[in-house]
Image 1: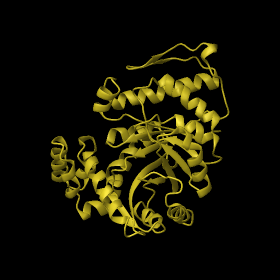
Image 2: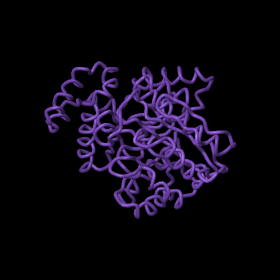
Image 3: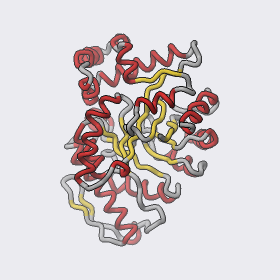
Length: 340
């Protein structure tokens, strides 16, 4: 199992220092997210200031960008990083697409399929000289003159990971993608009963095998080394789980465990803006099913035990890596993964 870091910063000028620190500690990869800032820009700096870590988006929102724009950015990042770039895409939910990005919400699974296939049409055109021709329901591409063609390079096989929660998106990932970004709001039971059966259906459609796809996730952990900090980690985790569980798009996780009533109560509290009430509904049973407690050194072993049977291939902790903030703890976890 690979152990990655998540970089979360407001300042691009901090990325070189953070990347170098992550490289020195021994993380396997770096992920950037698209929250208050663009997910791609930090990776240009991360590629420049790292040697062998993988670099990827977890995730970049797909639909506000044309597949052509995504294809160009991924092509340049793959070349510049010498093949270390992973393109992680997600659909986001309807509200963000319509109200934050002002793009239509239409058949997200079908549309994301076209994003993937049309990007690969661009890459094939640039690498192999094929004629650009993609004619889908949502996207049509047929123009590529020499002036706009970046040409081939040595790293054309760009891995695509997609965020997948529900069965059809898991099948799409199994059919077309090199990886899945599993939502942090997950359990081992949900992975076994929902995610993997549907990933396998997709793999079978295209004659692929388990080793052809990688599952990555950010996981909830509660470090227990520092008794003063531990309650804060626990409360923040309860708070985040309650927020995700209140979102209808993610309800399938609680349904897998028969916690439908709690999910409904959380949705009602969220609709009423009663955010402070929500963490109280996350019982110890729920918390310990979604999160892992332990010392920084012990958490890797517990994660490997929980995800035994190759449920996940790479993980990062839910809170971001910040250089100088508990480096000894991070080092203990890194050593735990490397020694397993």
